[in-house]
Length: 117
Image 1 (cartoon, rainbow, N blue to C red):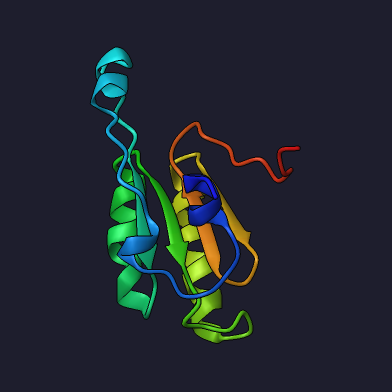
Image 2 (cartoon, rainbow, N blue to C red):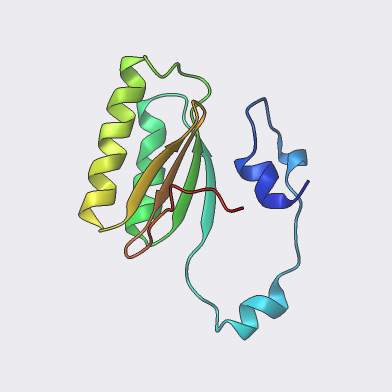
């Protein structure tokens, strides 16, 4: 299973061991040190959205795990509304993937709603 499949793949519990560290020093140097970082976050309560908002305001990409909440939970509604507002403010994008992940993109980045085939 590829790294993106692990990051964006099906539900279930994940740990740090599920992610593979890749040596991308050569790539970063060739890309001129492009400034976007992809952050992985876990949202347990409302206070967890503060660093997510900060990351997106700083121009970074966030994949947030919301498995601690059901999609009918009012906390999730609040969280999604707050993050949707951030995406609008920075002219970014936000999408919910299934019941367990929210993907938030920074300024000028859009998230396709179509799966690659």
